[in-house]
Image (cartoon, rainbow, N blue to C red):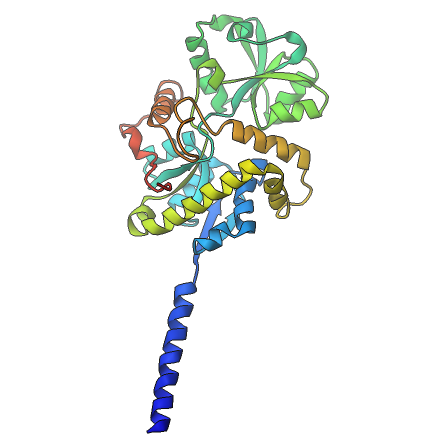
Length: 326
């Protein structure tokens, strides 16, 4: 009888141990970045390093990307759990049937900009007239440029474009073949000064043409089947970005551990630019990570008017604030 009781106790203990093991198993989650790791991606790595995702029961793997559009395709196909893409790519993907939705705002303001050699003294939209701007055919900035013309009542015939390949944009400014170029606040606007060319950058947002920037998105199926996982992932991501805002150096240093040959100074500039794009006037009073329906409505309108988007979906089909911490 005594032996029987011991066996019973042992069975109960083993069952409890098995249950505890199951309870402690973390959800395996993957995040597909929109591009190769750079400074503004580092908050995700800070969250990994500090255990924020682990505390939410998430075993996170971060994968580098090959563009926002590709990240949309990968997540839509279920190959990664979450992805990072700009709002334009999300809208384009969803409008073509991609079953995804954005759940976290990395940047509500657009990084699109026009950079000019600083000695030209370009400070306003009117100063664009009489200038030649280097651009690459098909880039989003080219497609949206007519909106700048319209918003600022410029003479479109007084602004010229020199179409070159991607690397040729910066070369044309450095060689003074053009006065300016279509640029990114976190890209050419930082790289050109490092190459000895002081530039003044006017953001599209400051010129009255803003589109929502980078977002984190996931499959709508996951939103329906496992909303708790989405909430836990978003909660850890909010915490990671809040920590990065408080300590950008720690964030960058966490990211550098996952990428060789990093220019730390450039990454610090990139993360600061990213933080400057966190909010628009519509979101500045909202908690970090929240979207504004008005900002998405503007983005959708601009894409329909200037980027040839065909979509009858409501603006709420592309994003939600539902999974952010209350």
